[in-house]
Image 1: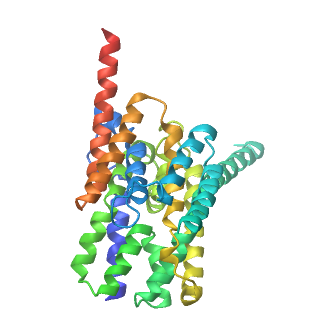
Image 2: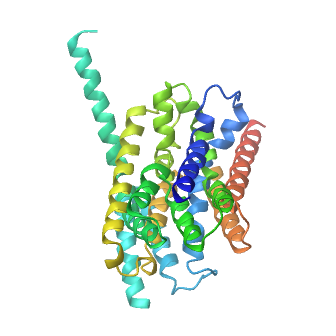
Length: 104
Length: 240
C-alpha cells in the first residue's frame, strides 16, 4: 500500500512537471499567454515565501518580535542591494537564528 | 566535425553543466535542512528505510513528501493522498507551461530528464530566462546537483533520524523563504513585476488565512494576469 502510494504520487508529480513540455500536446501559446507566463516565476516564488514569513505558526504575525518577518525584511534589502543569492541567504539565515535565540 | 571542435563542444557542455551546478548551490544548501526533515519524518511516519529514500529519489518533491508523510502517519486513504498531491503539485503545471517554449523542442530523453528535475528551485533559475538564453546543459547541471543534495540530505535524515533534535521547531523553513526572496527581489526591475510580487504576496496571504485549497495557484495566476494587464496599459499609455 505504501509502495503503491509512492508510485502513484510519483506519477502525479511527474505528469504535472512534464505535461506541457510534450510537443504532441496540441497547444500553441499565443502572445498573451506568453506575456502572462513571463511573470510566473516572480509570482509563484513570492506566493511560496510570503505565507511562510507572515504566518509562521498558523496565524498572521506582523509583530516586530516575529523573527521570520524581521529576517525576511533584511533579506529583501540585502537582495536588492547585492543581488547575490548566497550572501543574502546566508546572512539572513544567521540573523534569523540569532533573532530566534534572542527573542525566543 | 574535426577533433578540436568536438573537444570545444565537450568543454562548453562541461562549462554549462558546472555553471548550472554552481548557480543552484545556494538553493541546494538552503534546502539541506528540509531534506533532513523529509528523511527523518518519512521514517517517523512508518515508512521503511527504502520507502523513505524512494520518496526523495523518485517522487522528488519536498512539499508533497512532507504533506504525504503527514497523511501516511494519519492513516489517510489512497484517494485522499493522491488528491492532496495533485493540489500541492499543481504549481508544477504552471512551470511546465512556462518552460514549454524552452524545452518542448528538445528530444524525448531531455524532456523527460528536465521534466523530472523541474522543481521550484530549477524553475527559479531557468523560468526567468528567455527561450533563446536557455541552455539544456546548464539546466541539467543545476537539476542534477540539486537532486543529489536533496537525496543526500534525506539519507542523512533517515540514518540519523531519531538522534536529531526537534527539527520541526528550529524554523528551518526560513532558509527556503530566504532563497526565494534572494531570487525574486532582483527580478523586480519594472512596475509590472513589482505589481506581480505585491499581488502574489497579498493574495497568497489572504488565501492561506481563509484556508483556500489551491490558494497558491490562484494567487499566482491573479498576480500574473494583473501584471500583464498593467504592462499592456503602460504600453497603450506610451503609444498615445
